[in-house]
Length: 143
Ligand SMILES: Nc1ncnc2c1ncn2[C@@H]1O[C@@H]2COP(=O)(O)O[C@H]2[C@H]1O
Image 1 (spheres, helix red, strand yellow):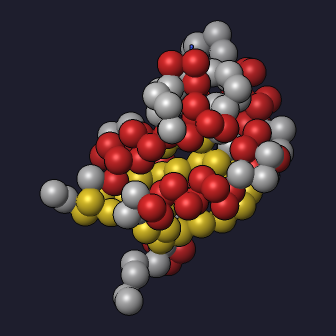
Image 2 (cartoon, helix red, strand yellow):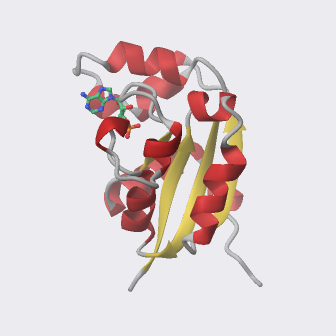
């Protein structure tokens, strides 16, 4: 299987709930390596640009308000089949539909405040990683 990179966001609800360590633990237990990380306070423009594909959706303004309501932790995860693996660990977008034991089942309360985001394809991973990280801010493991 191919080694891939994917973008992870731990959203304001999960950062505020002090769940960063628990969520990182799930990534690492699944064999994903954290190769880039930073905490950011997004503003309306930065959050809106990230979610530009949803600009016409009815939830876009609420999504921007939520994503700017507190800091987020953005990370680059690397590993075999990382994009699909990360999405499996997160669970369904709507936590009410998320499988037992997934991050959203355990840490999210609603589809609007759903704890985490992950890239959904190789193309979106490339765009989303470069949206938040310069090349020299991603550090391949050397040991
Ligand atoms: N009906 C909806 N469909 C998809 N995403 C939604 C919907 N309503 C709110 N959202 C939020 O919009 C976000 C867009 O991508 P995320 O994977 O970060 O998670 C999504 C949800 O938190």
